[in-house]
Image 1 (cartoon, one colour):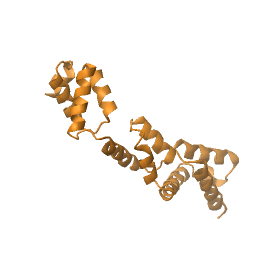
Image 2: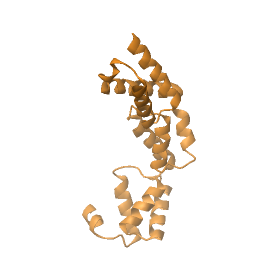
Image 3: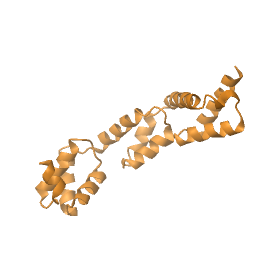
Image 4: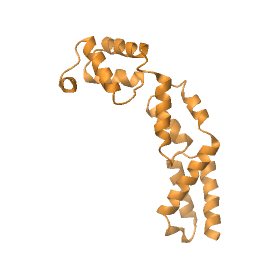
Length: 168
């Protein structure tokens, strides 16, 4: 049945709905992502909207659950901070109303723990350079942390730890 979907355009409402159900067997989608996916496959806009409405009615598409699953998947990425999380939620088309709820669940303590892990990763990658901490290395550490979505505050906390570990 999946082969028929991959070769043919979706012409009937039933084909559109069946294709959407098939997609949901592999992963969750937001309503907007599902609409886009169906339209790219060749479904007309009205049939795609009806299919998504039906999927929402039967709770196969649930925006709150989708937001939570995106967050849970993001948690497995251990070296990233608050800004990266927010960017990931936007990238995955999580509805704006759920983003503050997810962000509230990501505590300062959790971000600090993740910053520690990122620092450890940085230290491992730059072990030879760490023989003497200079401004160039400090800038590299700040860039490393910023690229992983940590705030400037977290980056400077880590820099202080770098200085302490280098002195000790």
